[in-house]
Image (cartoon, rainbow over all chains, first blue to last red; front, side, top):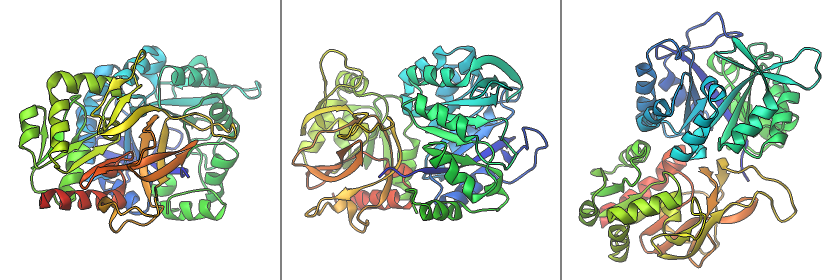
Length: 254
Length: 214
């Protein structure tokens, strides 16, 4: 049976891991490769390296990180942040990344998903969506871009469906309302997207307790759950999370 | 020398590093048919879509060189698309008729159904860690020391057909072959051993040991 995945995410800046609370107040939490190896030992199912300042800074550091990761890691990893073109994606995949996550660039030009999926296979293309609840609108969320700074007026569920139709292999769905809150995933959001698309959905944003991981999978119907701070600062090991999920009857690799 | 066949100018670093980590002394990423002929063992990794790989390998002469290597009894490991390519044909990116494969195993590679026999929906691509179930009588040397129902990392939308060569299966919407063996040292695996942490490295070590005996 396909196991539900637990994915530590490392926000990276200048080749180092940082984690923002609501995308500000960055804190240093170490070398991304060493951290990823520790997560591999704890049975992380894959890791994500998110280049949080890629849109403004030189990309070379991140390409180098992807290349080092290909040499030293024996588990899947995804690199996200700052892709503007298929050429950018090609460079990252050539460096060794298994997957890339595309966010703002795909919203600006959705054909980038189509082209990248045709060139590298849908399994390599993750569509990252930053979602914010529309106040007073019930189950409705809006897509934000540029690291969560710019609203787009685009409906999250509609955008997820289009990304899947264009060949994206997975959706990495972050709730901006919950990110950094430790209040748990936005399960209504996750479930709405997971039911609308036939590709896997990774829930992100808001984990603070063990129960939250299970809620994302059971109530949110997520195929994978992603977290950062709770792992980096040692609140829980990946193994503790997976043991908890197993105790709740959720299939995981231990 | 273990030759990793580069047919798509794709990302082969992980397979290369995995084989090195598994103890291979001499691994090369090759493009020329003559380099495949010179190899002691051949690894065909999983990059791109079936029809594209088929066209590229046929045009470059790699298809014939790999087929000859297999027929000569050299150790072969097909990973993901490299497993698919062992079969007669595949429908991925081939709208009219299946594109040709190596044809060392019978049947056509086709898309994973998105619903199981009870009509329950499954996500495709099949992405993540799933268990490998070996047949009762399987004695595939690639899996010496590997536990029954061990987890491996999969990422694919197409599966190979059942055949007498199936050694192990995985289930996602349907039960499909995840390990195929067509000769004493000719193997294909649907999962990615180079991405399957310790269990994957164990499989690669078993293959490297077989390759270095060759």
